[in-house]
Length: 174
Length: 174
Image (cartoon, one colour):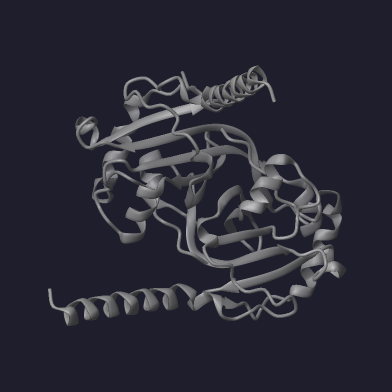
């Protein structure tokens, strides 16, 4: 193989990787207001903490995931959560599944529809000392959600101070 | 240090590792009937595919997770799923959260209660050729669930043959 072909191949590979990296980081550029939190890379693949359903205005299905620091702390029952903990809540519209209902023979199945938003709780006991050591953020489609008033997050979490302001508990393995 | 002390230390370390291995594999020893599937190690930490809620007799909240082969196939929209794919469905009782409801100021929050069971779909196009290439298993507390009639799994999945017999779709990242 000629040396120039090898160079072209290497250049192409480098460009492809650069483009993929750019695409992957698209959502990570803009910080949410107040707490200055950016979307942590790879959060969609974090480990599962638990699941929930909210009725009412939220009307969603949600999964709560954690980074490795969060999962370790949950499993060890370690409170307060250490600095570096990030807990994320992903939510989707609560929609009936006609496909599933046909198989079950009745209306009983609800699945994740279009995504609504994703929230993050980031532990930094110094940076966020005035809000229990937690920073809060909300994003939709990779952008900070303008509708979210992040000042209301912490007051709602105060009642669960005994669990370091975290509502979601680790779902036991079936 | 005397040679005998070193030997004792090494023996102790080996035993400790052997005991930890035994403890970790406790749940992996017993295969489910019909398809001969054992619990795959580490499944609780697999990546999230989606979430759902079933009403009726099931009355649960569920998370569907996948091993790396499953997640890759989902993301690439690759059908049929390749051999080695494992998809797991973890389910918990659907229970109201009084703790959350107090904060929301109304009855709207449902969370994962005690676990019900865990199911696995394992792709092996040769071994499970007569059931669309999929083997099925159900476990509770690490033991094959005696109540599960695994012969009923595949017939229920036949209507979704166009998606390689898999109902759950990958939930988009919010």
